Image (cartoon, rainbow, N blue to C red; front, side, top):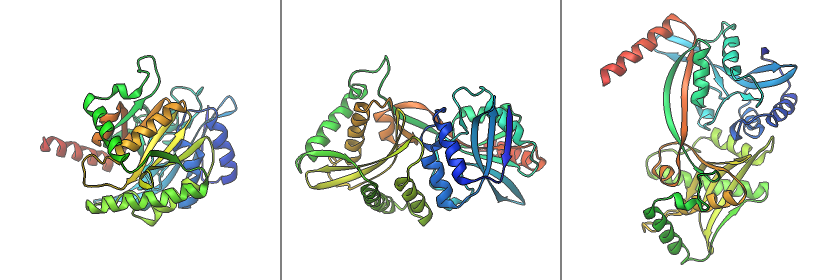
Length: 358
C-alpha cells in the first residue's frame, strides 16, 4: 500500500480519477464528484489530496483543507475532511462523509491513512464533519485522540428487504396513516395532488430558488436564518443543482394541488439510496394542512417505484423523521487530535466540565 499527500494536482485530472473510483466504491452522494467538484469550484478551495494505492490501483481518495482556529490562548492547525474550515462555506453541511474508498480496499485502509498523515508535522487535529462512527473508530485505531462535538441520529425508510411489507406505509402507526389520509383529502379540495420532478437544469434551478424562498421565510419567522441565508451557501447549492458529475443526481420536486403550489423537496439520489436534504413549504393555519408530510410520503412512494432501497432523512431528530422512518444509525461531528500537550490539557478540561455539569 502506498499513501501520498499532495498539495498540487490538476483539477480536471482529479475529476477523471475521482469519477473512475466512484464506479468501484459505495461512497454515496456526498462523496460523488457532483458534490465534491461543486464544492471545489464554488469555494475555490485547493485542499491537500490524499491518495492511497493498492496493487497499482487507486484504493482511496480524500481532500483535506488546511485551516487554523484560535482557541483560548493558543492556535490550532487543522485539516478539514471535505470542508473548508470557514463557517460561511461549511454551512452547506456534508453528511455520510468519509474517504472515497474502493469496495475491495483493505478493511483497515482508513486507519492506515490516518497513520500516514501523522508523518506530517504541520497539523494538530483533523476535523471530521458528518462522518460515521466507523471513521471515528479508524481514527482511534491509528492512535489519534478523538473529541466528539456532536452526534445526531440518522432516520430513514427501508423500502426493500426480507422483513419489509409490500406497502411501506404499513410500517407507520395507525394515527400517522390517518393523518396522511386526512391531509391528502384536505389538499385535494384544491385539486389533484402531484409531486413533479424538475426535468431540465433550468427548471431545477427555478424549483431551487422557489424552495429557498419558502425555506428562508419559514425559518426567519421562527427567529433562525435557515440553511440558505448566506451568499456562500446559495452559490454552492446552485453549483450542485446546475452541475453533473459522477453517479450522483439532484432531484428537486414540486408538490402541487391543482394550480396551488404547496412546496418543494431538495433531494439527492445515488445508486439505490435517496437523500432528503432540505425543503420549503407554504404552510397554512389549518392543522390538516401538512404539505411536508404529504411531500415526503409521495417522494418515498416514487423512490420505491424507482427501485430505491433507502429513503434517507439524514442527520437530525425532527419528529417527522422518526415517525415516518426508523433509526438507521448515527452521524458524528468530531476532531481527531495528535498527541499535543495543549490539546491534551484541553481534552482534560472538557472532561472535567462534563463531570461537573452532571
